[in-house]
Length: 280
View 1 (tube, rainbow, N blue to C red):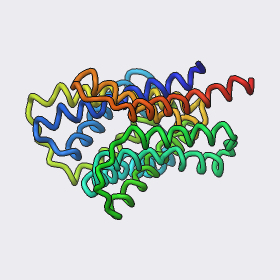
View 2: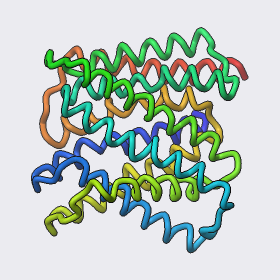
View 3: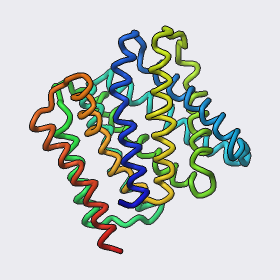
View 4: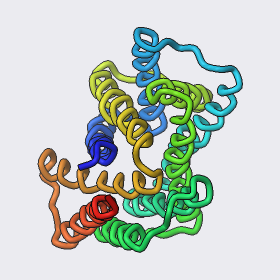
């Protein structure tokens, strides 16, 4: 497996733990916005320390505008849109619409970076979309506002990879992530009540470290080696990991339909790697 694809797979596996941490944190009656506020803030603090001890914190002043834009759309706006998509529809529908991201990534990757839209890529994209549709359980709670917010959350999710590809041209992955999360965190401050129970602290720290600090750092490194569109498609392995973890930790049921969907997502990811292997 090419190293870039391995990084995407590991990043998506980290992101697959989000539902586990969310379920544990909801026991403390924390609202989603407070959770993502601490997720971004603690991860930013970790990156601040990491960069301070290694490559330094300095960056060109002209780059700050780019990272303010990046942080606003791909952290603050993405988290907010997804949160309200869940509020005005359902978790399942919000997840399904979130994973329209590879469609946006494929189109933007072609327009901005000249990434080829090959038959194998289109087939892989179709496979993962069908897979996500099978994995999610729709409950019939469909409202136009919820659908619109869900589609926009998918677009801002795709923007993370597109803007990340641009950031990786000049900046190290860990520094790019620090400034992106830092600005996203700043935009969240006016909307959050920061008081949380002491018992929630270990889970917030784990949420900030594994699926945020480590997950996004791996994804940023992957964007140096893999097309943004391909990375976005392979990252749809996330709901498969979430399903398996929910089954192992909380004993949630896995239906035959969900297993078929998981297989389709894995098949889509493997198709991309097979195409690259044949091209070489």
